[in-house]
Length: 116
Image (tube, rainbow, N blue to C red; front, top):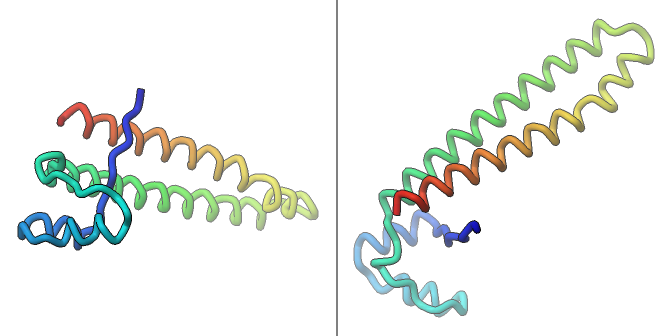
C-alpha cells in the first residue's frame, strides 16, 4: 500500500532548517496540524525532489522529440494522411509518456519511503 508524503515548498524547508516558527504559522494558516521536525528527513526529500525534476526534464525532452518526429512524418506523408498522422498519433504517445512518467515518479517516491 502506498503511503502519501506531504511535500513542502523550498521556503518551508528553509524555515525548517533555520528552526524558525514558520512551520507552525504555515500549518495554522493552512488549517493543518503542525509538522513535527523529526518526521521530515530533508536530505532524502531533496534527493527525491531532484530525481523527480530530472525525470520531468527527460519526459519533456522525450515529448518534444516525439512531436518533432510526428511533424517530420506528417511533412513526408502524402495528402490527407499527413493530417491524420498529426490528428491521431499524438494522443497514444502522450498517454504512453504520461503512464511511464507516473510509474517512474511513484518508483522514486517508493525508494524514498524505503530509505526512511
